[in-house]
Image (tube, rainbow, N blue to C red; front, side, top):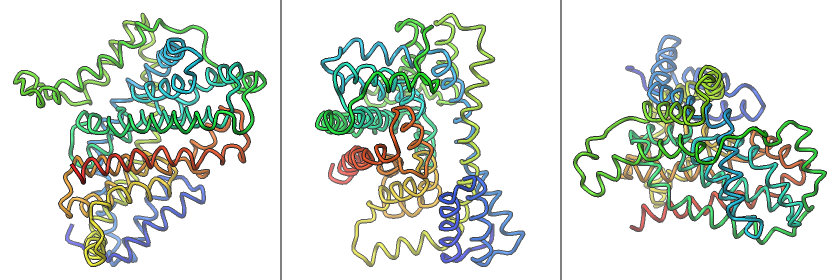
Length: 433
C-alpha cells in the first residue's frame, strides 16, 4: 500500500471502534469509523485511508465465502428441528439422574454441529427448565450448564468463530476443530462440576418458568424429525472434515489427498441431511434462513477486516513485539490475551476472534508461535469473557431462562471460569508439550 500508519493512530482507531460498540452503535459502522479515524490520525491521507479500508476488507473474503457456505448447514440444523431432536435425544438417553451432564452435553453437541451458541441455549432452555422444575435445580446451575456446554461446543464447531480463527492463521477448519477438542472436553468437565455445585444456589426452576418460556415463543417445536435422521447432516460433516487430518496422522495416502474445503463439505452435508429428514421441498426456506443468520456475521467480518488492515499497516504490531520483549513476558501469551480482550470488548466470540486474528495475528506469529497454537489460544481465549451485558448473548440467555438481569449477572463469573479453563488447557498444550 506504500503507507505506514503510526501506532498511536492505530491504537486510537481500535479504541474508538470498541467504545462505539459499547455505546451500541452498529458494530460494522463502529469498526469502519474506527479504521478511518485511526488511519487519518496515523498520518494517512484520504486516498490512502480508502486503500487501507478496501485492502483490509478484501483480506477476509476467503472467510466470508466459507461463512456463507456454512449458512446452508446452519439453516438446515436450526429450521428443520434437527438440533432440537438431538438435544431431546441426549437428555432422554442420560435420564434426569444425570440432568446437569445431559444438559451441558446436549448444548455442547448441538453447538459443535454448527448451531450458534445463543440459538443452542434457546433450543435446550425449555428442556432444562422442565427437568429443573422436577429435579429442584436452580436456574443459575441450569444456565451455567447450558452456557458452559455451549462454550465447549463452540470451539470445536464449524461456526463463524472457528472459521475465522482457522483462516486467520491460514489453517484448515478441521485442523483447528481437532486441536480444540481436548480444551473442549476440559471445558465440559469444568461446566458439569461448577453447575453441580450450584444446583441448589439461587431460585429453583419452576413450571412458571417453563410457561414463561413458552409465552416468549422459545418453546420446543412439536414436529421433530427422528434422532436417526437428525444426526445425518452433522455426522456426515464431521466424517468428511476429519478424513484429511486422520489420513495425515495415520499416513493413509488416499485420505491425505482428500483436501476438500469446508466450503464444499458443509453445504453438501446440510443438503444430504435435509433429504434424509424428507425435507427436500424446503430447501429454499432453509437456505434463506441460513443466509439471513450469517448476514450480520459477514458484515462484521468486513468491518473487522478493515480495522485489521489498519493495524497491520501500522507500526503497532512492531511496537507490541518490542514492548513484550523488553518486559520479559513470553510472547506466546499475546495470543490468549488478544482473544480475551477483544471478545470482552465486543461481548462476542466471533467478533473477538476476528479482531484478534486480524489485528494481532502477525505480531503473535512473529514470536515464533506456530499458527495452530496461535489459533487455539486466540480461539479459547475469546470464550473467557464473551458473555458480558453489552452483548446480545447475555440478554437472549436471560430471557430464555426467565431470569432478571441481576440473576443473569450472577452466572458471569462461573461462565468465565469455564472459558478460562479451556484457555489454560489450550495454552499449556502448546507451551509445555
